[in-house]
Image (cartoon, rainbow, N blue to C red; front, side, top):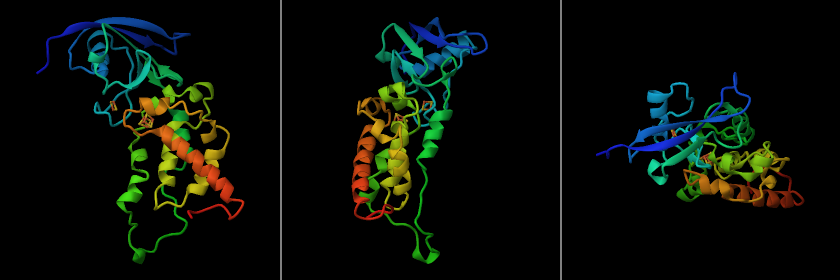
Length: 250
Ligand code: SF4
Ligand code: FES
């Protein structure tokens, strides 16, 4: 059963690209319930106080990845983050390191292009004949990549990453984790193609291992581990290229 409402103050970043040269903040004091998430408060503000507020959300269950914002300076999934974690004043801003479209909504285009760059689909060296049957995979082979497939594309790791902050072209934690996920999949033969992307300027070797990405990930994906593993595999692949031609798994 929900407890009775108390009041909290929300300092929310506002930006209207048609009118504002720079972002500003609006302050709202609203009644909140102890069991609310940050997103509940934003929805209350939009529904009951200021319908001009723009923010993005969909599932309300930490699955769609669309509700990421800076809450008191840290990247958070607002549908998963309890208001009870905060004091009387909560500061909500758009995700750091992304261009702002409006208010709390950020531009995702460049992020999605980075995902496409790592070819996040199964690549097979040759077509499999129907009589060969389906691909089989052992539990151990599944474990090699399973955690990296839990990413919900929420972009929190990009907002936390100091390398992205200084070098926006950096491929970034989630895209590397996704490419690495396919490289580690025993059914896939695309690692040579993805490693070319990983080795480019702004690829895995641009990472300075701050580990902030893994600390903020709401799905325990550990993208920092993916980046370090991808670095190691690329060094080994590079060394191996002096002995055998690149391509395929060995
Ligand atoms: S790796 Fe984690 S923080 Fe980064 S986009 Fe995926 S789920 Fe979000
Ligand atoms: S609304 Fe879908 S992850 Fe938060």
